[in-house]
Length: 611
Image (cartoon, rainbow, N blue to C red; front, side, top):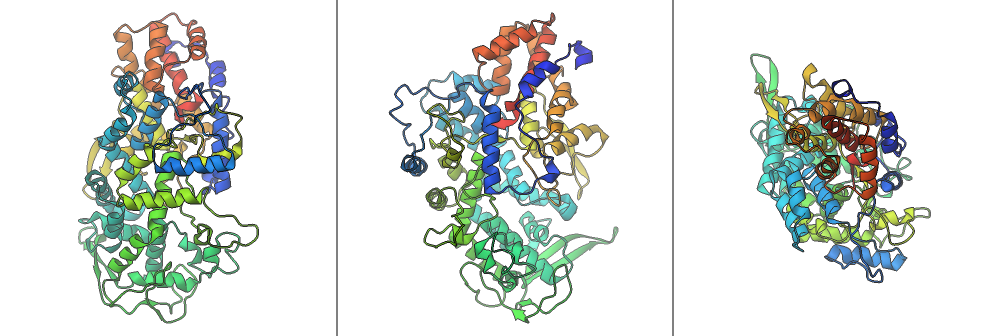
């Protein structure tokens, strides 16, 4: 960009805009965040963005009156704030709501034309209407299909040619409004061929290429317990909980390895028959069916885990002790036990809230300790209840059950609350970090790798144009968004090396042995400043910036007006306008001014945050 436009050095300006970057941790150094770590990260993000965001609240002239509760969520959160003396914050302004909601529901910045129409709309119900609009959009379908692909770890390294059918199942489920409980039934209990019935790939992905039946059954039980209940059952897959988990998980500390085998026994009546491609002499698909079985054979020294002993173990559900009837279709009965248990609702209510806010009541979200979420349990000295707000967690579980596990309906309920619409700034007193668990301030958190990439696409007006393939059919397509990439191993080839570098630097992981992370690192800052992902799109003839130049929008004030709305979905503040005009005065050409302005905005620290 600098050679094309003969820009003078911008290191000083970049330092001013980026100096508040928090301390970085390299992506591969970060394990799953504990609750304390997550809270510390949120508070660090507040500090990082505090100097960037001026205002960001609806002005309430009489602060003796708190914002009105908009639904049952606010009844719970406001009551806790008032009981503990935590000030109830102001609501965010329309521009902040618009940007936040678009990123939460679609993974993208709001469409620039929609930004202008929304901000100019005087309809008092426009927020609720905008939520409904996004819930029915194609962008919502793409983002949430990707969400499930990521959560259920659709990875070509393990599934090979079955990634396409697995992804198609999630896309169809979101588009058609399949409920969360029905998705669980589909993935746990289905029979058929995994290339024809994509949901069956949950079983294969959970099996994770294990070699012996006991490991396969263990892995699937772990996958089902973790993904549908949020309980880290892998902790008791190699040994009993005693003498290992007393300082980690009180519930699992009392569980034995045999308790996992009893869960795994539900899958002992499942047969996987491989179908071999005669030309390549490789298994190309699996037929999955139910057979008669006596249970889980615990007498073996083979496999990836320590030797087992104890004879045949029959199925028993971990949380209730329930057992199946008959000795055939145990998976269907297991699925019903999963979805009918309150922990299923509690887990999904918690996880979806975590997606919306960047901070769930229970963190890590797949680390539930069942003894520490029940207020009737007396905890050992030194232990606290796990949820930030037990009443909120149970209220959210109730809300999800009442809405029949409908994804859109639950998200609608959460986003229409005043708690969700709180400002991320705090202007109702002196902020204390101890307020963060109360959600009186919307938790500022980083975009995912795909959100950061797609934010650049919206800001510049240039689609991704990425070539991705299907390994099974050997066919290819061009996709417009990072959220449409079917597998972290794509796009492939030197042509897309910069895209892969960008996504990897922002922590997308690979869904197998490199975990997704949402931390910052110096590579991200360098890529935003120097990567062709930014420069080439910014200067593309079909891009938004060059369209403005061709249309004669070259006055500095007009450029600031338009590019702030395009990039941040809000007008510039007076201080931002003054600082930018002073910086841009050093450029004589309108094209140089326009390119420099967009570059500066994309390199602001708040560009890759949701606030």
